[in-house]
Length: 141
Image (tube, rainbow, N blue to C red; front, side, top):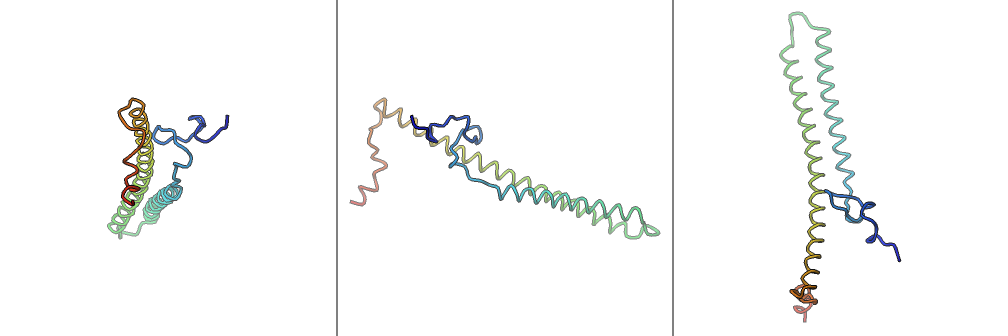
């Protein structure tokens, strides 16, 4: 008995959204995952810079609290920007997961359609020759 990819045990196949799939059904999204990591690191750096800026001002305050309004406004702006960056990275993660789920759903639907067609052919409800798939051949003649 030859061992092919289609006869490989389901436990060794990759799983998308709970469905075992073939290796060629996967589309790597390493670029998006890397972009997510870069955006999260950038968000952490911006937040760290905001905190350092406030800490430096706090340790060496000018007399009379000069620049406090500007400092508070700038720090809040940096914190909000860091939060938006983090939200963007979360959105990228959601896009990756959505892509995986849609891909797994398409594979599952193709499998179910094939199984239902085979059941219809076996029960006699469908003809063995697929006339629907041969329309283009008839149109060309």
